[in-house]
Length: 168
Image 1 (cartoon, rainbow, N blue to C red):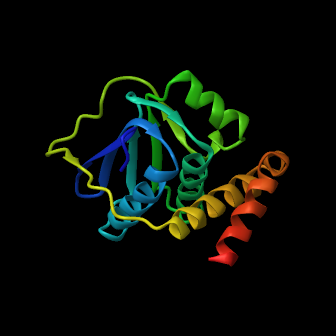
Image 2: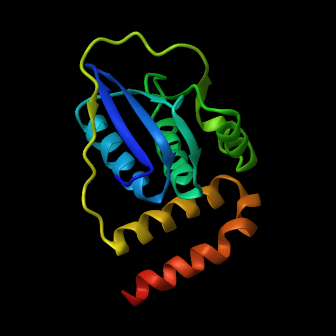
């Protein structure tokens, strides 16, 4: 990833615990989305996102997280798909509430999940500037779609990112 964030993954049969360490930001959001997609493709239906060591999330990461939360909710008629945020600090909870996306997640505080297996460090993939711009645009569009109050906050950034993508 980059110098300010790391991600570890502990995978079970139908569940995974993803630990975010440091700042969850634009750079880590693309890797996070890829990891969740890969785990989902392998049959994972419960995602525990362990945040006790995550100091902050930027709006791109929050938008990616909201997009995953939305997709799990939309495909969750049986109630078996789940995205749970474990041990987020007050600042992260406040950001989720302010952006109007906290309802997309279960939020819990307490110990680490009781899971067997080896936690492995996720190795970041190379990413282009265009990939980062695309994921940032998608994330901010998600935040604006989930909560119309976010339009005023992110419309200029979304326009700038869309222009940047068109030019490349």
